[in-house]
Image (cartoon, rainbow, N blue to C red):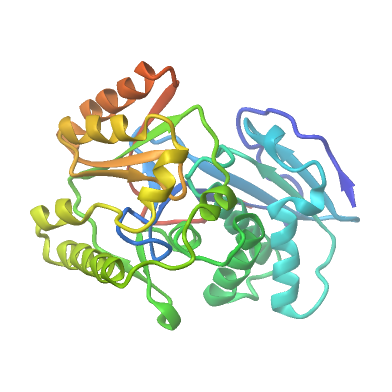
Length: 328
């Protein structure tokens, strides 16, 4: 397999050559506060700029993997440790046959260990690009399984709270064997993403979680998750605000993120319905009415800056499409 060192091209290059396919996979929020490992949402920035990873797959004489983009330098030096390559292997296992040689190019648009579903975005984009290049033999269920398998090599376990919304779009509830189910989301509510200059690998964030929790906490967590799902279906805004909280894992993970409590408090004081870790963190997200989203972002980011931590803000809505073919 030929490889190329990462570079820092600011944008993905167009697919070139016969049979080349490029797929985009968006950023996401895992858990959505109340739903550890079972809720997630795909994100579309309000400014219209694509925010996610791109993977191009093309027929080749020999297997090849290139990494580009602003965060390519953070990826493993060994290409076989790259999630795009792991996705290729997962597709081959699903199909039960070796794949033809492919030239794969990852444009890494999401920061690594950020809480934005970065690993899942690479895995999903790669699986869909490879499947498209091969004539779509996997189907939706096969794509979901292959992407989850590939992403697990980074996170340490299979969980679909990022993979499912990135693949299918929307707000997704992982309904066990029934598969991901889409939940409604109010049109006037925005996601305020707060992106500190910190990194927190998912494996590290999972390592602090207790192996067992008290039964009363299990009951309270189940009640809170059920309330959030009901609030979304019923359009009950006060119930939604009351249930946008994490009783289960946030108490263990918040200490890993400097300034967490101050940022969360600032977001709520500025009018956010809720504020919590995005996935495993260190990014936080807040939910706010469209009219208040910018102010929520500025107030919350200022709290981090007062603690000496640089912070960027992205205002987003739900991405209803998920991973999609953009070229080829």
